[in-house]
Image (cartoon, rainbow, N blue to C red; front, side, top):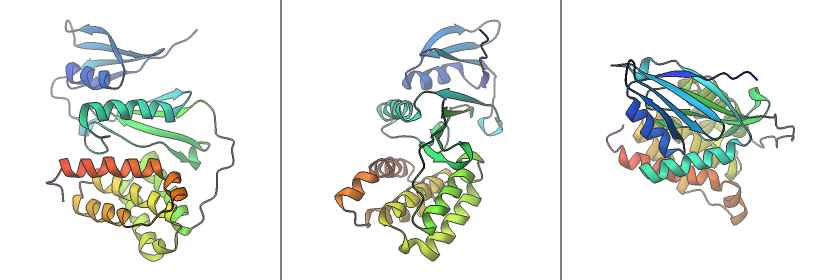
Length: 242
């Protein structure tokens, strides 16, 4: 049996430990000398961290891929931990987490990413490709959202994701089914907060709140609406944005 374990940098092993404990990890090793080092474990996998004084999260490009059985269930556990510790799911700054979304460039897998306080990015994907044929978006906006998620989440090109979403929202947003409009606006709000644009985020949240949804439509987008509520709480806490 061969095992590969990532060793990731961090500015503070104590801050890193506290963050991962809220997500359900257990600290199994804590070392200060000769070098700061911790091991955090969850189920049958581990993360190792070494401390570096003055480490800047903005300059961190460390990442690792974590393959799990069910990204949706894991995300919900992480989200519950964040809400218990912070009252919301963090979507901007350090730490933060994206929401699971299926991506055409990953075999239709629903993946998400977790960025820790030191800027390390853990990318979570399920073991198997989803061979269930995804429902094709009904609108131009829905198709643009698929592309925007690849740009914003897979490639990290938030400005370009914003550009194509804004263009389509302006030209064809009102033509989209309410469910696709909600999904697009929630993602656009998340992008606004990632960029520190609180004014735009507030406008988008107001627009989401004004959309009339049937009970069936509300059930379809219940996770997106829960994310919108998290985004609203984050905006309230970051009231100086914009």
